[in-house]
Length: 171
Image 1 (cartoon, rainbow, N blue to C red):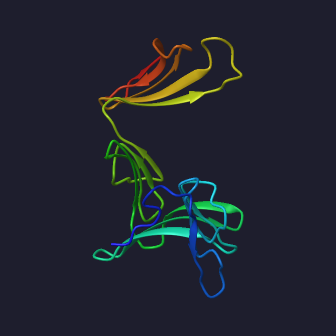
Image 2: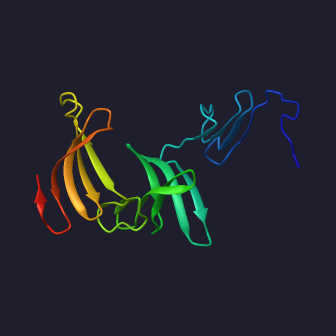
């Protein structure tokens, strides 16, 4: 084991590459690590002139996730043919399959945007509308389909139109 700055000394160190004097830089005084950058400004800072990327790869399943900057675009995704999962508390909340279909509440979306839950509601809010008229909703509830509005506190719904399971329309 080799230890640097064992006594907490402010002693930076760097590893040079063939063409990069700051291939790997430890800024001991600020507790930061840089890859390709002389003065890292974040805990881990990766910099390159052409398409810098952070790559995480599972070689058993050939899955490669990447976070990067590509010209004028920030990128998050895969370069392998695998879906993407966005997780909260280690539970999938949003998925994007290999065909670009996005699922919220499902990890196997069947359409470009697929919402799945018990009593699924899609809320559309126009912030320029008047009080208690800003938010409209589309509801799928036990097979029925409805439209309505929500008050600004989102605690009172007023249904304005419904198509029931039998196809009957209610206004």
